[in-house]
Image 1 (tube, one colour):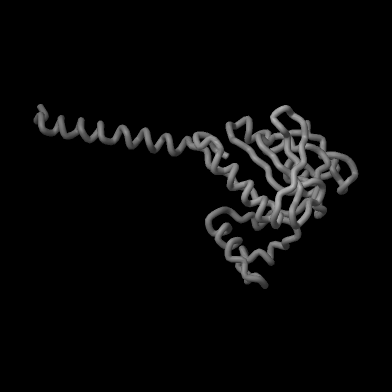
Image 2 (image 1 turned 90 degrees about the horizontal axis):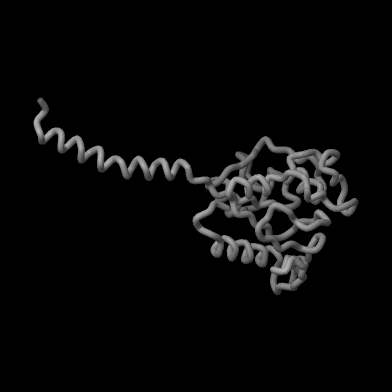
Length: 196
């Protein structure tokens, strides 16, 4: 027969471990947040995220690379801005997703895209900045996009009103700063119980 002291100590240890196990399982089941930043006209060598030195100091790119993930074996399926976005969104080459050239025709929003898949998996999705696909974005809970290429200063943004109608509004400032502010505002005001 085991002494009572050992049984009590063993029971207390199991009770103390139970909440830790529940917390660990909850943490394991939590979906990671994903922040996807697309920038134009950057060769991978110029970003300073590889082993080679960048010709320009880009400390924020380096910080993102250190704290996130760098795809150093990812290649552009179509080097034009809109078609490359269409390839990224759909995972399909231009001849399959239908968006081969800028201004040719709108991207068919009924195609499967990774934002739609993320929404189905319970993610909140937002898009801010350059779209340049001649169509309204699909698969995003919230979006505010430039008309066409957009303007560097005092850019216009297209968004949807609550009634589903498009609206265009001008915002003062440098486009990159405005996009950053809109993105941060969305991140701060989203549902914190769901991944983004």
